[in-house]
Every structure is written in C-alpha cells, then in structure tokens.
Amino acid sequence: MRLSNAPKYFLFGAFLLISTAACGSSGNGSNSPPASIPEPPRSIPFATKEPDVYSAGLVVITGGSERKFAIVRDNTRLRIDFEVGTPAHRVFIRTSELYLVDPLNKRFADISGTDDPYFGPEFVMDLANQLLTAKIYSDFEDIGTRDGLLVFRTVLNGSTTSEVLVLFDKLLGMPVRQEFYSVEAENRTMMYAVELRDFSTSIDAAAFEIPKDFRRVSRRELEQ
Image 1: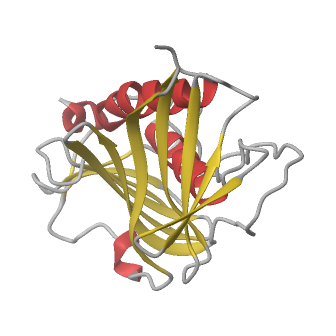
Image 2: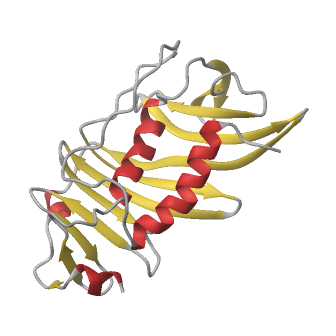
C-alpha cells in the first residue's frame, strides 16, 4: 500500500519532524506567526478559520499510542507544549522574546536571536492550521454523523490510494479530527489521526510567563 501526498506529509511530519522538534532544532524559526498555507479553489461545506485566541490539546494517534501537544494562542503570543506527559516534555513560549522551557526540571533558556532557530513551533502550528481549516483539500462528500460530529470524506489531488475523513463539530464551528486512510481495492486501513481536544477560547495569561522559581540556563544545557 502507498500513501498520497497528504498522508505522507502528516505521517512523516508528525512522527519524524515533531520528534526532532521536541529536542532539537532546524529550519526557519522566528518570533513572527507561521506563514499561511495557500488555499486552493475548493467546494467546502463549512466555514473554517483558525481562531486568533484559543487553547487546545493536539493529539497525534497511531495504532494504540498517542503523542500529546498543547497550544495556547493569543494573537501573536504563543505557547506550545511538546510531548505532554512524558520525560521529554518541553515548552516553547513566544512573546516579545523566545523561550524554551523544561518544566519537569524547572529550567528555561532564552533562544531569541539564535543562529539555530527552533523548528518545532512552526510545524505544530501548521499541523493545527491544517486540522482547523482543512486548507489542502478541495472537495468534500457528506457521509453522515459519528458521535454527534458531521463526517466528510475527501482526498488530495484525486488520489485513489488514500482518503481522509474530516470530523466537524457544529457547536464549535470547526473540524476537530482528521483520519488518514490507506486504500487498496476494497480495503481501508487507518494509518493515523490528528485530533483537537479540550478546545477553549478562554486562555490563562500566566501560560506565557516563566515561573519565578525556574532557573535560567543555556540552550545547550537545557537540550542535553
């Protein structure tokens, strides 16, 4: 079985790039919001827009395992928790400065203006934006409901070897889950899913603050 571009992007991105993002760096990082993805002409059955202010959990599910992330966004201010609930838990905070935080060991590093930008935040926000806006898809088929959510089937670039189910929450007014399937003849196999949890438009301003009892260290020390 093979995957089309969309599942390849999410699968390899979610499990390779996020892995390196949580403990390392590369790519283009800055204190400006990530660039938006060009939106193709499409027939979409619901209006979508990533909120400017919100908090939510973002979960990548494959097989019986989950990798958990958390996002707090207040316009240009941003907090992302990586690998929540594991020893590798790290936090990226963007205000007027950029910080990387190790909450388990109460340490933080100022990574503003470094020559080695931190890649993870841009990727996670891109993942969230793809989930919340479904920008990369052009046509949707309404196939019913599941657990009170509207379910739409879509594919990328007319693929016959993969499909995506987009689950839309009418109360929130946005997609909250995408499931990626490999298709071979009559067989459909879910490869992984990306899910939004505990969404709220109320945020805690303290999420963007470094606790006073945290110790400042170098980035090298924090990433060891």
